[in-house]
Length: 90
Image (spheres, rainbow, N blue to C red):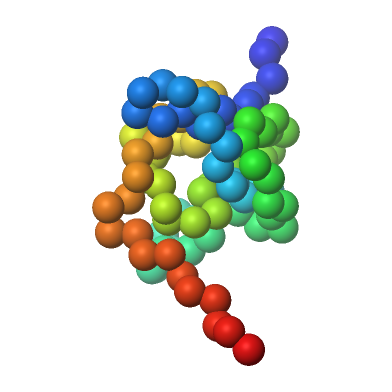
């Protein structure tokens, strides 16, 4: 048996940290829109070890994964349409 893990790689196959949400997997079959696939999540930076009932998703849309399942080694590319949110100045 091997533990479940998540390691993110860039297009040159170099490891780099990305912010991920890890939480309890939720069944979303048949739900309209873009519902959350996890519940009660915690935010971590990769690499991350996943529990047996855990699921991970990207915290931001800054990167696009090449795989649909975020488990094991995942290759990410920059999202060309991503615009960083500006924080309001007080």
